[in-house]
Image 1 (cartoon, rainbow over the protein chains, first blue to last red):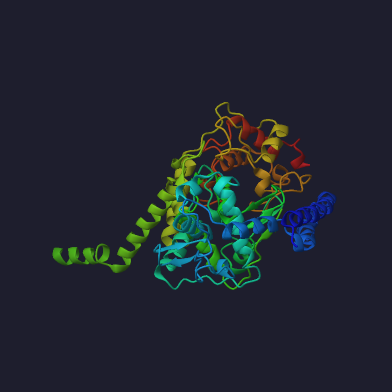
Image 2: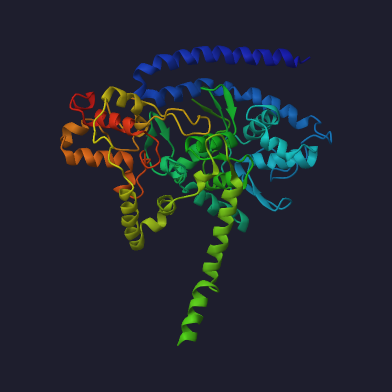
Length: 278
Length: 205
């Protein structure tokens, strides 16, 4: 007989042990940081590859998916992420995409908002306004982890066949190069050419296929520094914060378009989701 | 003749399907941006209202045209004209304080307060003092900045201008306009100047 609570405790313990070992290695690495940060992080990733803490979020998401919830007391099992109602496997590798029912291009998070509001009757506005990592956003984190894990190792294959898909890509490209704020930054300032770093942090060139595949393909991810699972929505939110822009609205067409630009550039790459980041 | 001109004008602007598509795309983009952001803390929506420089530099295709090259010179002139020389005539402050300003990347985000002391974030993009190995490479190395260039008045003014408003020399430079947007105070800029141009600064050893 399965004891779910006991299993989850075991997972916790296994992860904890790995973390203690891994953080020791990271601390030891700081002295030779300049030449081998990337190497050490790669080693760390490899070591933890069979135990990414995202698993905890994924497990929670799998439960949420099947659990009746919201005013309609319904599950998400009929949620259509583009490959048919309830199909999870490979779905996020083909997002964002055009959805006929909403007549919009949607990314994973905006599509999950649609599913939660139409199937379960949960207020879309409440999801959008919830603070990150809390309440309905916490549920979203878990659902996202669940869905993206089912696309791990899948080929990124995002369509631009529908005119609205093509348009979202072009709008996203323009947003990517849009400069503003008191520092004149755009996404392209840091992510528009090869071999750039902020301090020691390597910056993927998101305008190239290889860079976009590395960047887009490894988010959402578990962040070791904050001990949190970050969705793409939160990742982009923090980019705009550091760009000194105003606050990008969660689930907005803007975030979908920027995602579309990165995802299409990444086509042919491999989803390594959920990723593991510093 | 007039009719012909008018007709070709109408074709060019109003009825040209390409121009129409562009106008509709522009409108969609503006709408997406307007609906895509909200004000948060000190980061108001005015931050996505672009000035001439930002507008110009957001279109990489245009920059590389002949027209773009001419526009770039115009943009540089506008930025040059906005630079204020130090009110007290002093270009060089305290390099130690300059180092601290160069290290700090704080300020101007929606999680900062209006009274947060901004950093210059210089090490984010530049190598400066070689002792600091955690530096970015978006900008050029500034190691031995003064030693290599000398300490003439010309170098002082150029460097002051460059920190104040880098766009005065390169319309689409990646460097923020620290003076133009009051990201750094006059005193802070004098201190950063010292880090680069005080012969005693570790940068010039």
